[in-house]
Image 1 (cartoon, rainbow, N blue to C red):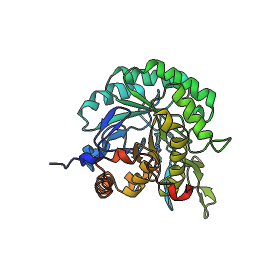
Image 2: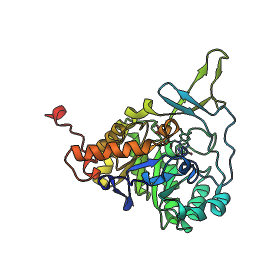
Image 3: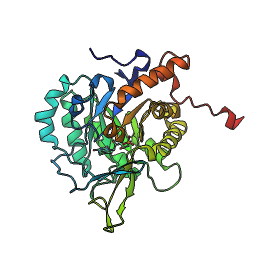
Image 4: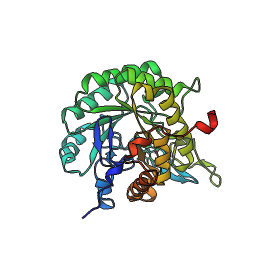
Length: 321
Ligand SMILES: Cc1cc2nc3c(=O)[nH]c(=O)nc-3n(C[C@H](O)[C@H](O)[C@H](O)COP(=O)(O)O)c2cc1C
């Protein structure tokens, strides 16, 4: 019999009950339950699927993924089976997956995003839709997350057609403009109807093979994930939490370099309600079990009954007194 996560780490995410605040990040756990071969999925609060686009995509040519010294560099290019295949082959199997299945959506246009989200929502099998407005690895149409006006229009259009699922918007860690521009984008997304925020996607990056003098990835550039980006995202989560989300009552899912329970705990202290693991699953697909155990012990040791008590609870008193 699988051992379920300790009740002390069960959380409510935007009203959805999750057994654990630990989720599989989009694109790192397949399109449904592929991880089930190696991980009892009841250890995950949810799986976030690979981003689904309207048409099937083969993605970029190989090599499209490589190890970086402190993480991973990828330019998969949104390889996915497309909406029709999702509706006919994947949606009917969601009810049989022993955890929540959250669906990530990507598109080239506002119409694409709205059509995909509407079709998914109408199946009533998806408790949360995560809008990937921040994928750095495709050449067209995915700059919604960088442009406040386009982002607002996109989220509002999707909100109009999503009546059942919660709507989270996943932003890029790289924003132009003032240091607070991620806060501004977060506000735009929520004002347009998002229920919550996922922070963040990968950091645009590049590797070069010094022997061939060619870029390592066929796409030339890609996205960096893993431990290298963790402290960057901790800061961003804390920034958005303190400057916007806390007072607005908006929940945050943090993603970036979680490979130990301490990383997940750090995100929660910074202001996240849940965390996603991406690159860490490639190194150890059973990592969620270890992270759940570590978090449960931490909660008990700190003398609290539930992990939610730690959301945003970083102690800044020594710095300000
Ligand atoms: C191989 C790979 C594929 C990814 N595909 C997607 C995707 O389809 N949609 C998306 O929103 N994010 C995608 N991501 C980004 C992850 O969901 C996550 O935001 C990012 O990797 C940071 O988390 P990590 O440091 O734990 O990997 C992908 C990441 C990797 C490593």
